[in-house]
Length: 76
Figure 1 (cartoon, rainbow, N blue to C red):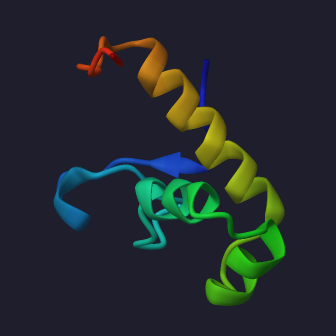
Figure 2 (figure 1 turned 180 degrees about the vertical axis):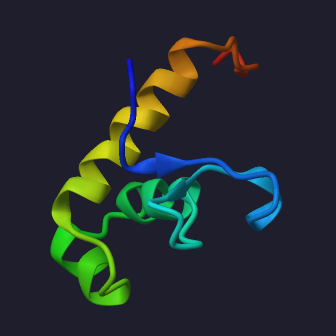
């Protein structure tokens, strides 16, 4: 899977994935969605983003967790 809107540059933001080189980390956008913000609210907070940026950030995050095993606590 390729991501045209996600960039990683070791010279920018410590190499974390960002949206189109804008210094807006994918993790920030995904966290905003997780906190219950709508796409419209995210776009208002970051006017340089467009709706497709938010969708691709979510697809990127989904692919990232498919590629790794994350430690989870087992419920009682």
